[in-house]
Amino acid sequence: MSRPAVMAPERRPTRQIAVGNVPVGGGAPISVQSMTITKTADVEGTLAQIYALAAAGADIVRCTCNEQAAAEGLARMVPRSPVPLVADVHFHHEMALAALEAGVHGLRLNPGNLRKPEEIKLVAAEARDRGVPIRIGVNAGSLHPELYKRFGGATPEALVESARMELAYFEEVGFDDVKISVKASNVPLMIAAYRLAAETFDHPLHLGVTEAGPPPAGLLKATAGIATLLAEGIGDTIRYSLTADPVEEARAGRQLLEALGLRERKGLDLIACPSCGRAEIDVIGVAKQVQEALEERSLPIQVAVMGCVVNGPGEAREADLGIAAGKHRGHLFIKGQIVRVVPEAEMVEALVAEAEKLVAEGIEARLAAADTGAAAEAEADRQALFASQGDDVNASEARVELIRKTIRHERNGSTEA
Ligand code: SF4
Image (spheres, rainbow, N blue to C red):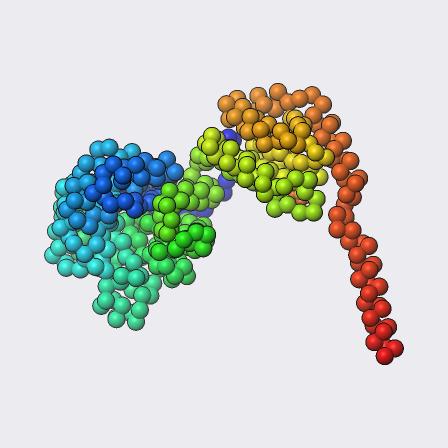
Protein backbone atom coordinates (compact mmCIF):
# COMPACT_ATOMS: atom_id res chain seq x y z
CA MET A 1 0.00 0.00 0.00
CA SER A 2 1.14 3.59 -0.49
CA ARG A 3 3.34 4.98 2.24
CA PRO A 4 4.20 8.52 3.27
CA ALA A 5 7.78 9.55 2.42
CA VAL A 6 10.02 7.94 5.05
CA MET A 7 13.14 9.57 6.35
CA ALA A 8 15.34 6.48 6.53
CA PRO A 9 18.77 7.09 8.09
CA GLU A 10 21.60 7.97 5.71
CA ARG A 11 23.69 4.84 5.19
CA ARG A 12 27.45 4.64 5.74
CA PRO A 13 29.09 4.21 2.33
CA THR A 14 30.77 0.82 1.91
CA ARG A 15 32.12 -1.29 -0.90
CA GLN A 16 29.74 -3.91 -2.24
CA ILE A 17 30.08 -7.68 -2.28
CA ALA A 18 27.67 -10.31 -3.60
CA VAL A 19 26.58 -13.38 -1.68
CA GLY A 20 25.19 -15.40 -4.56
CA ASN A 21 22.58 -13.11 -6.10
CA VAL A 22 22.23 -10.93 -2.98
CA PRO A 23 24.30 -7.73 -3.02
CA VAL A 24 25.55 -6.63 0.40
CA GLY A 25 26.82 -3.10 1.11
CA GLY A 26 27.36 -0.26 -1.33
CA GLY A 27 23.78 1.00 -0.98
CA ALA A 28 22.13 -2.41 -1.52
CA PRO A 29 18.97 -3.07 0.53
CA ILE A 30 19.92 -4.32 3.99
CA SER A 31 19.58 -8.10 3.91
CA VAL A 32 18.23 -10.44 6.56
CA GLN A 33 20.11 -13.58 7.54
CA SER A 34 19.33 -16.55 9.70
CA MET A 35 20.88 -19.91 10.44
CA THR A 36 19.48 -23.43 10.28
CA ILE A 37 19.44 -25.53 13.45
CA THR A 38 19.05 -28.91 11.75
CA LYS A 39 22.01 -31.20 11.08
CA THR A 40 23.39 -29.96 7.76
CA ALA A 41 23.83 -33.57 6.65
CA ASP A 42 20.03 -33.95 6.85
CA VAL A 43 19.37 -32.51 3.40
CA GLU A 44 15.57 -32.73 3.33
CA GLY A 45 15.10 -31.44 6.89
CA THR A 46 17.54 -28.59 6.37
CA LEU A 47 16.04 -27.61 3.03
CA ALA A 48 12.57 -27.51 4.61
CA GLN A 49 13.95 -25.10 7.21
CA ILE A 50 15.70 -22.99 4.57
CA TYR A 51 12.39 -22.64 2.69
CA ALA A 52 10.61 -21.65 5.93
CA LEU A 53 13.31 -19.06 6.68
CA ALA A 54 13.11 -17.62 3.16
CA ALA A 55 9.30 -17.39 3.45
CA ALA A 56 9.69 -15.55 6.79
CA GLY A 57 12.01 -12.94 5.26
CA ALA A 58 15.56 -14.37 5.19
CA ASP A 59 17.58 -13.28 2.15
CA ILE A 60 20.63 -15.40 3.03
CA VAL A 61 20.81 -18.58 5.14
CA ARG A 62 23.83 -19.99 6.96
CA CYS A 63 24.37 -23.65 7.78
CA THR A 64 27.09 -25.12 9.91
CA CYS A 65 29.82 -27.01 8.07
CA ASN A 66 31.38 -28.98 10.89
CA GLU A 67 31.99 -32.38 9.31
CA GLN A 68 32.39 -34.04 5.96
CA ALA A 69 28.73 -35.15 5.91
CA ALA A 70 27.69 -31.49 6.37
CA ALA A 71 29.80 -30.41 3.38
CA GLU A 72 28.25 -33.19 1.32
CA GLY A 73 24.79 -32.05 2.43
CA LEU A 74 25.64 -28.51 1.32
CA ALA A 75 26.65 -29.78 -2.10
CA ARG A 76 23.20 -31.34 -2.47
CA MET A 77 21.32 -28.32 -1.12
CA VAL A 78 23.05 -25.51 -3.04
CA PRO A 79 21.18 -26.16 -6.32
CA ARG A 80 17.84 -26.57 -4.52
CA SER A 81 17.99 -23.62 -2.11
CA PRO A 82 15.74 -20.59 -2.74
CA VAL A 83 18.37 -18.28 -1.20
CA PRO A 84 22.19 -18.14 -1.15
CA LEU A 85 23.83 -20.46 1.38
CA VAL A 86 26.76 -19.56 3.63
CA ALA A 87 28.87 -22.21 5.37
CA ASP A 88 29.73 -21.51 8.99
CA VAL A 89 33.23 -22.74 9.79
CA HIS A 90 35.05 -22.98 13.11
CA PHE A 91 38.38 -24.63 13.98
CA HIS A 92 38.83 -26.71 10.80
CA HIS A 93 40.08 -24.97 7.68
CA GLU A 94 39.50 -28.16 5.68
CA MET A 95 35.75 -27.70 6.31
CA ALA A 96 36.01 -24.28 4.64
CA LEU A 97 37.73 -25.89 1.65
CA ALA A 98 35.10 -28.64 1.55
CA ALA A 99 32.29 -26.05 1.66
CA LEU A 100 33.88 -24.23 -1.27
CA GLU A 101 33.94 -27.55 -3.13
CA ALA A 102 30.23 -27.89 -2.27
CA GLY A 103 29.58 -24.64 -4.16
CA VAL A 104 28.41 -22.45 -1.26
CA HIS A 105 27.81 -18.75 -1.94
CA GLY A 106 29.77 -17.54 1.08
CA LEU A 107 31.91 -18.60 4.02
CA ARG A 108 31.96 -17.41 7.60
CA LEU A 109 35.31 -17.87 9.35
CA ASN A 110 35.88 -17.28 13.05
CA PRO A 111 39.38 -15.78 13.49
CA GLY A 112 39.23 -16.68 17.18
CA ASN A 113 39.43 -20.40 16.55
CA LEU A 114 40.87 -20.71 13.05
CA ARG A 115 44.25 -19.24 13.79
CA LYS A 116 47.03 -20.65 11.61
CA PRO A 117 48.04 -17.97 9.06
CA GLU A 118 48.93 -20.53 6.38
CA GLU A 119 45.53 -22.21 6.65
CA ILE A 120 43.70 -18.86 6.63
CA LYS A 121 45.60 -17.78 3.51
CA LEU A 122 44.94 -21.11 1.81
CA VAL A 123 41.18 -20.71 2.33
CA ALA A 124 41.26 -17.06 1.22
CA ALA A 125 43.18 -17.94 -1.96
CA GLU A 126 40.68 -20.68 -2.78
CA ALA A 127 37.73 -18.31 -2.14
CA ARG A 128 39.45 -15.69 -4.33
CA ASP A 129 39.81 -18.13 -7.22
CA ARG A 130 36.16 -19.16 -6.95
CA GLY A 131 34.80 -15.61 -6.44
CA VAL A 132 33.21 -16.52 -3.10
CA PRO A 133 33.04 -13.88 -0.34
CA ILE A 134 34.04 -14.50 3.26
CA ARG A 135 32.65 -13.01 6.43
CA ILE A 136 35.26 -12.36 9.08
CA GLY A 137 33.05 -13.29 12.00
CA VAL A 138 34.69 -12.03 15.17
CA ASN A 139 32.93 -12.98 18.37
CA ALA A 140 33.69 -11.54 21.83
CA GLY A 141 33.12 -14.94 23.42
CA SER A 142 35.72 -16.68 21.24
CA LEU A 143 38.26 -13.91 20.80
CA HIS A 144 41.83 -14.96 19.98
CA PRO A 145 43.50 -15.55 23.41
CA GLU A 146 46.51 -13.35 22.53
CA LEU A 147 44.25 -10.41 21.75
CA TYR A 148 42.32 -11.02 24.94
CA LYS A 149 45.60 -10.76 26.84
CA ARG A 150 46.95 -7.79 24.88
CA PHE A 151 43.80 -5.67 25.29
CA GLY A 152 42.94 -6.86 28.80
CA GLY A 153 39.65 -8.43 27.68
CA ALA A 154 37.19 -8.48 24.82
CA THR A 155 37.17 -4.72 24.27
CA PRO A 156 35.85 -3.00 21.11
CA GLU A 157 39.48 -2.36 20.10
CA ALA A 158 40.35 -6.06 20.55
CA LEU A 159 37.40 -7.19 18.40
CA VAL A 160 38.26 -4.74 15.62
CA GLU A 161 41.95 -5.69 15.80
CA SER A 162 41.00 -9.34 15.33
CA ALA A 163 39.14 -8.44 12.12
CA ARG A 164 42.02 -6.22 10.96
CA MET A 165 44.57 -9.02 11.43
CA GLU A 166 42.42 -11.49 9.47
CA LEU A 167 41.97 -8.93 6.72
CA ALA A 168 45.77 -8.50 6.56
CA TYR A 169 46.21 -12.26 5.96
CA PHE A 170 43.57 -12.10 3.21
CA GLU A 171 45.30 -9.13 1.61
CA GLU A 172 48.55 -11.08 1.44
CA VAL A 173 46.88 -13.36 -1.10
CA GLY A 174 45.06 -10.52 -2.85
CA PHE A 175 41.60 -11.26 -1.43
CA ASP A 176 39.23 -8.66 -0.03
CA ASP A 177 35.80 -9.89 -1.02
CA VAL A 178 34.86 -9.54 2.61
CA LYS A 179 32.21 -8.51 5.09
CA ILE A 180 32.90 -8.14 8.78
CA SER A 181 31.08 -8.77 12.04
CA VAL A 182 32.24 -7.94 15.58
CA LYS A 183 29.52 -9.51 17.67
CA ALA A 184 29.12 -9.62 21.43
CA SER A 185 26.28 -10.65 23.70
CA ASN A 186 26.81 -7.49 25.74
CA VAL A 187 24.84 -4.82 23.89
CA PRO A 188 26.89 -1.68 24.79
CA LEU A 189 30.10 -3.58 23.87
CA MET A 190 28.59 -4.72 20.58
CA ILE A 191 27.48 -1.17 19.71
CA ALA A 192 30.90 0.31 20.54
CA ALA A 193 32.70 -2.42 18.57
CA TYR A 194 30.61 -1.85 15.43
CA ARG A 195 30.99 1.94 15.66
CA LEU A 196 34.76 1.45 15.75
CA ALA A 197 34.59 -1.09 12.89
CA ALA A 198 32.60 1.42 10.83
CA GLU A 199 35.36 4.01 11.35
CA THR A 200 38.11 1.48 10.59
CA PHE A 201 36.86 -0.46 7.53
CA ASP A 202 34.92 0.33 4.39
CA HIS A 203 33.76 -3.29 4.06
CA PRO A 204 30.10 -4.11 4.57
CA LEU A 205 29.18 -4.92 8.17
CA HIS A 206 27.04 -7.85 9.29
CA LEU A 207 25.26 -6.84 12.52
CA GLY A 208 24.23 -9.08 15.37
CA VAL A 209 24.03 -9.42 19.13
CA THR A 210 25.37 -12.92 19.61
CA GLU A 211 23.67 -15.42 21.91
CA ALA A 212 20.89 -12.92 22.67
CA GLY A 213 18.82 -15.70 24.31
CA PRO A 214 15.14 -16.60 24.14
CA PRO A 215 12.40 -14.06 23.33
CA PRO A 216 11.15 -11.68 24.52
CA ALA A 217 14.37 -10.62 26.32
CA GLY A 218 16.51 -11.90 23.42
CA LEU A 219 14.45 -9.96 20.90
CA LEU A 220 14.83 -6.79 22.96
CA LYS A 221 18.59 -7.21 23.35
CA ALA A 222 19.12 -7.90 19.67
CA THR A 223 16.85 -5.02 18.65
CA ALA A 224 18.57 -2.62 21.06
CA GLY A 225 21.94 -3.35 19.45
CA ILE A 226 20.97 -3.72 15.80
CA ALA A 227 18.44 -0.88 15.66
CA THR A 228 20.77 1.58 17.38
CA LEU A 229 23.43 0.98 14.74
CA LEU A 230 21.00 0.96 11.81
CA ALA A 231 19.60 4.29 12.99
CA GLU A 232 23.18 5.63 12.74
CA GLY A 233 23.46 4.33 9.17
CA ILE A 234 25.77 1.46 10.21
CA GLY A 235 25.07 -2.08 8.99
CA ASP A 236 24.53 -3.81 5.65
CA THR A 237 23.12 -7.19 6.65
CA ILE A 238 21.64 -8.36 9.96
CA ARG A 239 20.96 -11.48 11.97
CA TYR A 240 18.93 -11.98 15.14
CA SER A 241 20.59 -14.76 17.20
CA LEU A 242 17.68 -16.07 19.23
CA THR A 243 17.25 -19.21 21.28
CA ALA A 244 14.07 -20.00 19.37
CA ASP A 245 12.77 -21.40 16.11
CA PRO A 246 15.00 -19.62 13.53
CA VAL A 247 11.85 -18.59 11.66
CA GLU A 248 11.39 -16.09 14.51
CA GLU A 249 14.86 -14.70 13.77
CA ALA A 250 14.10 -14.19 10.11
CA ARG A 251 10.71 -12.63 10.86
CA ALA A 252 12.18 -10.30 13.48
CA GLY A 253 14.94 -9.18 11.11
CA ARG A 254 12.50 -8.43 8.35
CA GLN A 255 10.07 -6.63 10.69
CA LEU A 256 12.83 -4.47 12.14
CA LEU A 257 13.96 -3.33 8.70
CA GLU A 258 10.37 -2.61 7.69
CA ALA A 259 9.74 -0.69 10.92
CA LEU A 260 12.80 1.49 10.27
CA GLY A 261 11.71 2.13 6.68
CA LEU A 262 14.80 0.30 5.39
CA ARG A 263 12.91 -2.39 3.46
CA GLU A 264 9.64 -2.33 1.58
CA ARG A 265 6.73 -3.71 3.61
CA LYS A 266 5.91 -7.31 2.70
CA GLY A 267 3.42 -8.09 5.42
CA LEU A 268 1.02 -6.66 7.95
CA ASP A 269 1.78 -3.58 10.06
CA LEU A 270 -0.73 -3.62 12.89
CA ILE A 271 -1.33 -0.45 14.85
CA ALA A 272 -3.50 -0.91 17.92
CA CYS A 273 -4.29 1.51 20.71
CA PRO A 274 -3.17 0.45 24.20
CA SER A 275 -6.81 0.70 25.38
CA CYS A 276 -7.97 2.87 28.27
CA GLY A 277 -11.08 3.67 30.24
CA ARG A 278 -12.86 4.79 27.09
CA ALA A 279 -12.50 1.44 25.29
CA GLU A 280 -15.76 0.01 24.02
CA ILE A 281 -14.33 -3.42 23.16
CA ASP A 282 -11.67 -5.87 24.31
CA VAL A 283 -8.91 -4.19 22.27
CA ILE A 284 -6.29 -6.86 23.06
CA GLY A 285 -8.58 -9.72 21.97
CA VAL A 286 -9.78 -7.99 18.80
CA ALA A 287 -6.24 -6.95 17.82
CA LYS A 288 -5.10 -10.58 18.22
CA GLN A 289 -7.95 -11.88 16.04
CA VAL A 290 -7.19 -9.26 13.37
CA GLN A 291 -3.47 -10.04 13.47
CA GLU A 292 -4.02 -13.77 13.05
CA ALA A 293 -6.52 -13.37 10.21
CA LEU A 294 -4.43 -10.86 8.26
CA GLU A 295 -1.06 -12.59 8.79
CA GLU A 296 -2.59 -15.80 7.48
CA ARG A 297 -3.47 -13.91 4.30
CA SER A 298 -0.03 -12.20 4.03
CA LEU A 299 -1.53 -8.83 3.13
CA PRO A 300 0.99 -5.95 2.83
CA ILE A 301 -1.15 -3.41 4.61
CA GLN A 302 -1.16 -1.12 7.64
CA VAL A 303 -4.23 -1.73 9.80
CA ALA A 304 -5.38 0.02 12.97
CA VAL A 305 -7.56 -1.39 15.75
CA MET A 306 -8.78 1.38 18.04
CA GLY A 307 -10.80 0.89 21.20
CA CYS A 308 -13.17 3.83 20.78
CA VAL A 309 -14.53 6.15 18.15
CA VAL A 310 -13.85 9.28 20.19
CA ASN A 311 -10.14 9.34 19.35
CA GLY A 312 -9.61 6.23 17.22
CA PRO A 313 -10.10 7.29 13.59
CA GLY A 314 -8.27 10.58 14.13
CA GLU A 315 -5.27 9.06 15.88
CA ALA A 316 -4.93 6.31 13.27
CA ARG A 317 -5.68 8.45 10.24
CA GLU A 318 -2.41 7.49 8.52
CA ALA A 319 -3.29 3.77 8.55
CA ASP A 320 -4.46 2.24 5.26
CA LEU A 321 -7.43 0.75 7.05
CA GLY A 322 -8.78 0.71 10.57
CA ILE A 323 -11.67 -0.03 12.84
CA ALA A 324 -12.82 1.84 15.91
CA ALA A 325 -15.47 0.67 18.39
CA GLY A 326 -18.43 2.69 19.51
CA LYS A 327 -21.91 1.99 20.91
CA HIS A 328 -21.81 -1.72 19.99
CA ARG A 329 -20.80 -0.91 16.44
CA GLY A 330 -17.56 -0.84 14.54
CA HIS A 331 -16.56 2.13 12.39
CA LEU A 332 -14.43 1.05 9.43
CA PHE A 333 -12.17 3.76 8.09
CA ILE A 334 -9.72 4.09 5.21
CA LYS A 335 -7.01 6.74 5.63
CA GLY A 336 -9.14 8.27 8.41
CA GLN A 337 -12.36 8.46 6.32
CA ILE A 338 -15.33 6.42 7.57
CA VAL A 339 -16.49 4.01 4.88
CA ARG A 340 -18.82 1.64 6.74
CA VAL A 341 -20.51 1.11 10.12
CA VAL A 342 -21.02 -2.55 11.11
CA PRO A 343 -22.41 -4.40 14.15
CA GLU A 344 -19.78 -5.10 16.81
CA ALA A 345 -20.00 -8.88 16.30
CA GLU A 346 -19.02 -8.45 12.63
CA MET A 347 -16.12 -6.04 13.16
CA VAL A 348 -13.24 -8.46 12.56
CA GLU A 349 -14.90 -10.18 9.60
CA ALA A 350 -15.72 -6.81 7.97
CA LEU A 351 -12.19 -5.52 8.53
CA VAL A 352 -10.59 -8.59 6.97
CA ALA A 353 -12.94 -8.50 3.96
CA GLU A 354 -12.18 -4.80 3.43
CA ALA A 355 -8.42 -5.45 3.76
CA GLU A 356 -8.57 -8.00 0.94
CA LYS A 357 -10.53 -5.61 -1.30
CA LEU A 358 -8.23 -2.71 -0.45
CA VAL A 359 -5.10 -4.65 -1.44
CA ALA A 360 -6.81 -5.87 -4.65
CA GLU A 361 -8.50 -2.60 -5.73
CA GLY A 362 -6.51 0.23 -4.13
CA ILE A 363 -7.41 3.09 -1.79
CA GLU A 364 -9.17 5.38 -4.29
CA ALA A 365 -11.52 2.62 -5.48
CA ARG A 366 -12.43 1.59 -1.95
CA LEU A 367 -13.03 5.18 -0.84
CA ALA A 368 -15.34 5.57 -3.83
CA ALA A 369 -17.23 2.43 -2.74
CA ALA A 370 -17.91 3.83 0.77
CA ASP A 371 -21.47 3.46 2.13
CA THR A 372 -23.39 6.69 1.78
CA GLY A 373 -24.39 7.93 5.19
CA ALA A 374 -21.64 5.98 6.99
CA ALA A 375 -19.83 9.14 8.02
CA ALA A 376 -23.03 10.68 9.43
CA GLU A 377 -23.92 7.48 11.31
CA ALA A 378 -20.44 7.30 12.75
CA GLU A 379 -20.53 10.94 13.83
CA ALA A 380 -23.83 10.32 15.63
CA ASP A 381 -22.26 7.38 17.54
CA ARG A 382 -19.24 9.50 18.35
CA GLN A 383 -21.36 12.33 19.74
CA ALA A 384 -23.52 9.90 21.76
CA LEU A 385 -20.41 8.34 23.26
CA PHE A 386 -18.88 11.71 23.94
CA ALA A 387 -22.07 12.85 25.68
CA SER A 388 -22.22 9.72 27.86
CA GLN A 389 -18.52 9.71 28.76
CA GLY A 390 -17.82 13.41 28.46
CA ASP A 391 -14.25 14.51 28.10
CA ASP A 392 -13.47 13.45 31.66
CA VAL A 393 -13.63 9.67 31.71
CA ASN A 394 -12.01 9.46 35.14
CA ALA A 395 -14.41 12.04 36.66
CA SER A 396 -11.23 13.83 37.56
CA GLU A 397 -12.73 17.15 38.67
CA ALA A 398 -14.93 15.41 41.24
CA ARG A 399 -11.93 13.34 42.36
CA VAL A 400 -9.74 16.43 42.70
CA GLU A 401 -12.38 18.02 44.92
CA LEU A 402 -12.46 14.86 47.08
CA ILE A 403 -8.65 14.83 47.38
CA ARG A 404 -8.66 18.46 48.49
CA LYS A 405 -11.37 17.75 51.06
CA THR A 406 -9.47 14.73 52.44
CA ILE A 407 -6.24 16.70 52.81
CA ARG A 408 -8.05 19.68 54.39
CA HIS A 409 -9.71 17.33 56.84
CA GLU A 410 -6.47 15.57 57.77
CA ARG A 411 -4.57 18.84 58.20
CA ASN A 412 -7.26 20.38 60.38
CA GLY A 413 -7.36 17.13 62.38
CA SER A 414 -3.61 17.18 63.05
CA THR A 415 -3.70 20.92 63.99
CA GLU A 416 -6.49 20.24 66.45
CA ALA A 417 -4.49 17.38 67.94
S1 SF4 B 1 -8.43 4.97 20.99
FE1 SF4 B 1 -9.96 5.31 22.58
S2 SF4 B 1 -9.86 3.41 23.82
FE2 SF4 B 1 -7.98 3.46 22.61
S3 SF4 B 1 -6.49 4.47 23.97
FE3 SF4 B 1 -7.36 6.07 22.63
S4 SF4 B 1 -9.06 6.94 23.86
FE4 SF4 B 1 -8.52 4.93 24.80
